[in-house]
Image: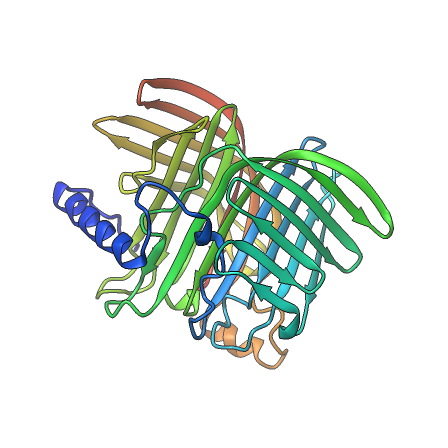
Length: 362
């Protein structure tokens, strides 16, 4: 059974010291995210994967996800496989997936800023604004993004998951909440879109499933609040198994109320069976409490929007052998959200919707 981190003053002091050392080691400014942090982070790292993720919710009820990948996160030791993935949900909840893989010679990326090109698709940005052009299998996406909530990283961004500090998984949230305008197109027809957008950036150098058993991750923008919440459950590390690692970010407007992750707790209930032999809870309650205040997030009535078999692109003869030891699967949901905040002079209760995922590696 997975265990919670017990939040003690000793643990807080240890985390603060380790975070300060990590920030210095990685050359990071503790007070702000810099433009280069959304650039190419694995250019000189062997056996590494990396992706830039954009998730837009439009006023007409449609959504689009665009991901720029250097290679699959479950095959970090494999050759580079630059690809663009587009997932589109129209106003009638119909979902379509489009992807495009290109030769390595058609990939380029800057280490100084987010400037990635994969074949005819590209993204450029400087944290404050981004332009995205993506195309795959006849579907096109053109977006102009303006950041409205400050960029953020959890701690020093990089989580080392072995004592030698050779295996890591890293994450920076360049746009926790932004406004977006642009156009989508399919088969020669195009239409305008406008709404909100989230953009983050991940990279690592080992099979995620060798470090993480599963995770829950979610984000929402409700009225003036921006929220990011996550719980990663590890495999056995440092002599322990199933450690729950929380991540939390809460802002009101452009003011960060807290990014202290340690107090965050998740309780799940009422599981149901899902595709691929996995399951998911239909009630998720996140709670955060310190001497300074409290935050509660209730997720209800999740709608499964996307389910992906993470070994679907492996050769057919390989899949049965993988499934003997693991069943890697991805679920993406839309759910009702109720947020209660009593922190930093802010005392409010609001309702809205959230996007969250369950990523399973076992």
